[in-house]
Length: 277
Image (cartoon, rainbow, N blue to C red; front, top):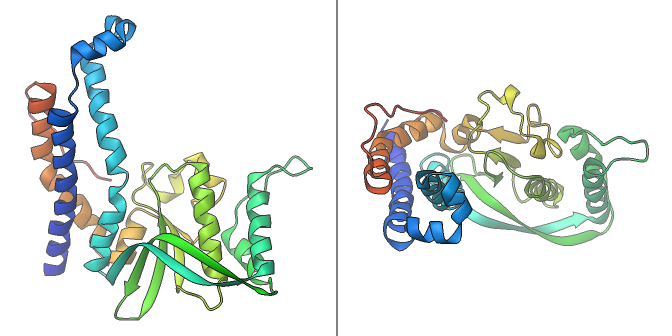
């Protein structure tokens, strides 16, 4: 219980620091100035209330930095869970030349339509089995992955490519190439590697429907893919995802109230409600 409480406090610390920076920026460093907006975009200002663009101004200054917070939160979960987390970890090893060629072949088949007018559907295990049959001279290779998590009790190491819940196709291709190389290294530098998303905007995994990563992974079935609670529970242990949701919901009302009053200049509604991820 104490470990979960410590994790929740650490999660809140990361989020509060981010939100304080966002509030400083939108209230002091880079506020929305209606007169400036009207001068730059008179047509927009004539047709749409300033309040709409004021909200958009806040959103842009919130979404970009928040996209970088997941790695920090993953480190909190790992350090309070399996044992230790490292950002931007470099794996250095060697890969048989034929495996490298097969990795390129697999990625090309997924990306391009064949002469028969078909595009290969992703199948992680079949692709990995095919690649691992490759041999040949060893080629020195380095891979920088987003997160390395060490299980200090079992002495096992896990690499993660951690992306936003709605990643684009190019990001996912790069991540898949990295993961395939991690599995292909001799000697293997990690016990396992995964493609992870911090939460599922579609709810259940079977309902995940964002098309871009679906070109590279079977997002509903591939064992190499972890979404939402699957990821957090793996690196932090049972209860980590709920601790994360609880941590956010505890501090959310304070920041919502500040945004309503200090930024939008209106009284907050009586019930802003809790939200689950």
